[in-house]
Length: 253
Image 1: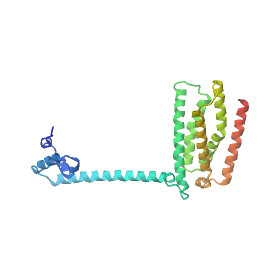
Image 2: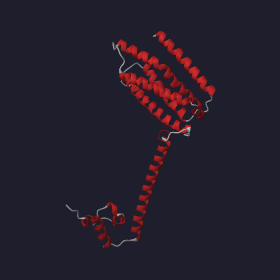
Image 3: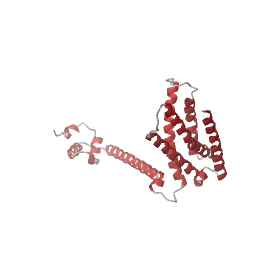
Image 4: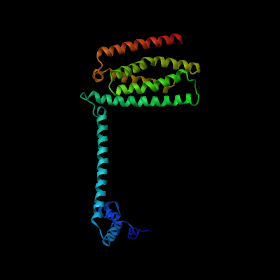
């Protein structure tokens, strides 16, 4: 069924008809012809012409702003991913740091979401006692993870120290995690660790080692004002305290 555009447009304001005629690409030829017929029967004032011109100028400005914004986002994404898209020896450490922050931020965000869920269960659903060790660990995570990431993002010296120490503790504690999980499986009379669990532990180990290696690079340390003596002290103190604590835990449990 063909539409009678002439009848449909008979009550349209003159400015709306002018918009159709001035930008006909978005309309059917019959619609443009009907608008032109109505305009030929009406008196068009300079105010009408000015209003339509202002409308299209604003519309064009909006379109340019959107295009410029999209182009700017594309440029930012290309700059952020340059070390991956165009790797080379001359890539600035700052660009690698931005990717590191993106990956670490995603990991921290995932951890925080899970911690929030567990804290909610503990408080609202009374799933565990408020002095339960897991509850306290989740609460501590909610406090220190955002603080660590903020300090690292702002390139504070303590940001590097705390994040590197945290990653190093995680690496040194992985055997403890494997031992604890194996003990749990034996208590549940499960003889072998599943492939998915092994893959998870391996992936976690590789990721943490990669994070530690990246932060240990001197060009990255320079971004935080961390010299070689501070690096070595962080490595030795963190390793010594961690191994001592893990040894005590193994003896006690």
